[in-house]
Each structure stands twice: as structure tokens, then as C-alpha cells.
Length: 117
Image 1 (tube, one colour):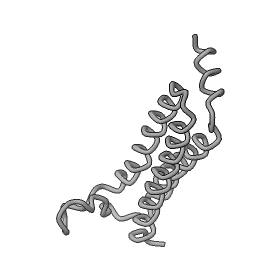
Image 2 (tube, rainbow, N blue to C red; image 1 turned 30 degrees about the vertical axis):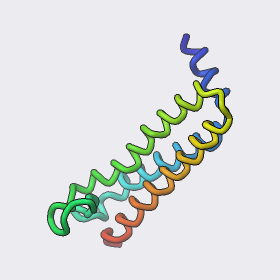
Image 3 (cartoon, rainbow, N blue to C red; image 1 turned 135 degrees about the vertical axis):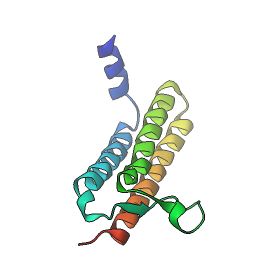
Image 4 (cartoon, rainbow, N blue to C red; image 1 turned 45 degrees about the vertical axis):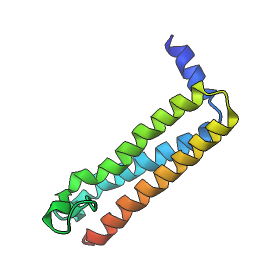
């Protein structure tokens, strides 16, 4: 059963795009964890909240955008695998690339804004 599942995943169309996006997100998470010592104890992440202390979170929370992106990539891979429509698969690839780009840019901008080098 496990071999069949892996065979199905590796036969996924556009697997290169999904794999690249997954690697970028894992790289961003690793970057934040490895270089987290350069960050102050709290960083601004919750920009939807009122300006001030409510926007601040612990520095480990900078991994949340990329972690959510990884979860969404997995969901998109599952949907793409069970979809036979080429258009839907292309839309899911585009969404995966957009989600990865936005989460990586957000995390890196915050990191370079508040990190002390």
C-alpha cells in the first residue's frame, strides 16, 4: 500500500513545481530557526491587529507563514492528484507558487527588518 501511494505521488503532474515550493518553505523555516539568535525576543508578525504590542509575537512564530504554506502545498498536491482536469492542476500550481512567494517574502522582510547583524 505504501509503495502504491509513493508511486502515485511521484507520478503527479507538475511535481517539480510542488517540490521546489516545498523546499523553499522548508529552507525559510530552517533559516529562521538557525539564525533566530539574531532576532529580538519578540517580532512584529500580526499586522492585522492594532498597532502596538498586540502585533508582537515570540521569534519562533516567524515559522508560521511557511508552515501554513507547507500544509497548503500538501492539500494542493492531494487535490491535484485526484483532479483529472488539467486547468485545475495548473491553477493549483499557480496558487502554490503564489503562497510560497508571499510567505517567504513576508518572513524574510520581517527577519531583515528586525534582525541585528
